[in-house]
Image 1 (cartoon, rainbow, N blue to C red):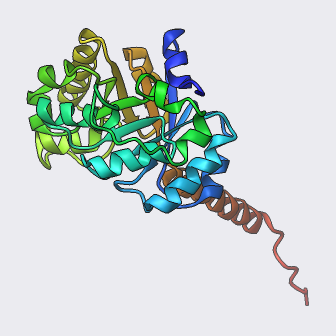
Image 2: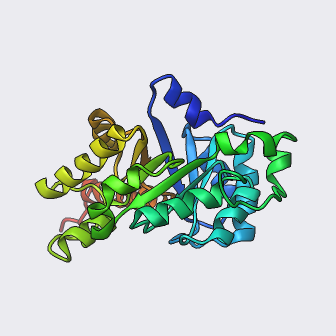
Length: 272
């Protein structure tokens, strides 16, 4: 079976830079896969992507060697198992709030006797190798998202769940969960109480022997998070990157046109 390169990077002590795909397009997935990310996550929760399109995006990513992952819409066995059968090497599951939910998540990702995953790796057996069934349990990555006050309160129980590979912090929802609407929504939290909460999740994950992942809005914040000790950082998503690049391009063009207009010589006025 093709090994999970995220596990290889972690074994060598290196962090993982993850990209995020919300646009339903194999071509945009292929473009993103060529930009140097270690992994790419297809977002089926908030992204505008369905299962069939996600499968073609997984196919587009395969040639690059980038590790493909999927954020499923919810803690649902059908969504999780179908994403794995389509070729995902990792699952990010939103809104995991209790130890019992974390245990269910793990069980949906492992074949018996370690879980309840049904065997039928329709595409995965071609994309990953004929021996997929023998090695998938050890290669797949299972991430529970920590993004509510309930999950934060149950953190010790969640991170100690056998078979859970890591926790993934959704800072926008976590901020809503812990502080309500006291702060604006968004990713790169600067409020001391939120930075403390993020670092507390990181510390408890590592103390339990699992990995910690963080969603970020900018590369600067992601680099800071790696400095704190995060094992995987996501930097923005395809939508924000496209919008940001387009906005910067148009703004530059308008600035240059404005400079040209301001610097143009005034028309000559005939003298009499």
